[in-house]
Length: 347
Image (cartoon, rainbow, N blue to C red; front, side):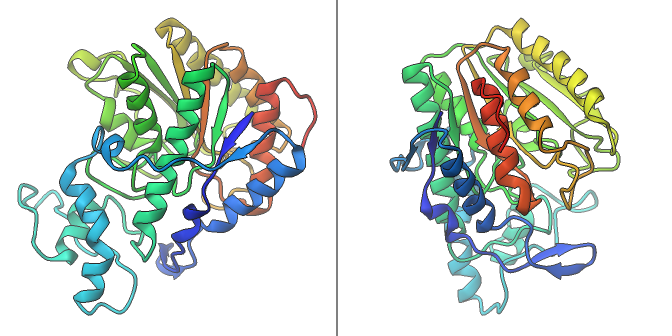
C-alpha cells in the first residue's frame, strides 16, 4: 500500500498541553510519525512518497476563510502582542456570552476559534497543518486515480477541526478535505468511517446537512468522554442530511468483541449507502495502553480491524487521526494496513 508523508508535519513542536489541571508535554508529538514511519519501512508495505503542495483552495472548500486567516497569522500576532508562552485560549463565547462578534484581539480570537484548551498554537503549526492536508489529498488522489488503497500519514490529525474551530490537536479536517476533494472530482457518494476513540465532532459538523457524504463513527460515549458535547446516537443529520450521520457511542472499557460487532453494523450502514470512496479516519487510540483513551484493543486486534474493513471492497484511503501509546503506535497502524491488505503477519 502506498503511503504519503511529509517531513513538514514535524514543524509543529508544541511544548504545552493543559491536562488534568496541569501543563504537560503534549501527547500529540512528532515522535508518533517517526515511529510509524520506522514500522512501515520495517514491514515493507510499499513506497513512501512526498505529497505535492496544493495550496489553500481544498481547505477553503470545507473551512471558513476567516478561520483559516486566523490560523495563518495567529502565532505572529501572538508574539507581536508580547505574550511569552504558546498561544492558548483562556476565554470562550460561552452560553452566557455573545457569539456573534469576533474580537479584534488575538487573545479573544483564540477563544472564538478554539473548541478546547488543550491545543496550543505554536511556531510551525500552520505549516504542519498545510502539509498534513497535502498528505491527505495526495493519498485520496492516488486512490481515485488507481482504485488502490492508500495511507496518509497525517499530522496534525484532523477530525476534531470544525468549519471554523480547532481543538483536540486538530486544525484542518483532513478527512473532510479529502472527501470534498473526491466529490469535486466527480464522486457522487463518499463515506467517512471514524474509528478513533474520540468522536470526530468536526467531521460531523461539516457534513451534518448533506446527503452526499455519509459520516459513521464508533467512539467513546460523549457523556463521559471528550469532546463531550457531540457524538450522541440521536445526532442523525439535519435537513437533506437526515439519516446520513450515524454515531455509535460505546462506554469506556468496551471489550473488543462488542466493538467489532458495532463495526459490523457500521460497515452495513456504509454498504447500504453504496459509496464510490471510503475514507477511514484511523485512530489507533482504541488500544488498551493509550494514555487518554479507554477501549481495550491489543496489538493483534488491529489486524482483525483491517480485515473487517477490507470486506467493504471499496476504494479506500486511510488517514491517521489519534493514537498516543507511542511505543505501540507504529505496530498498531501497520497491523491495520496489513490486515486490510490480506497479510496475516503481525508487526
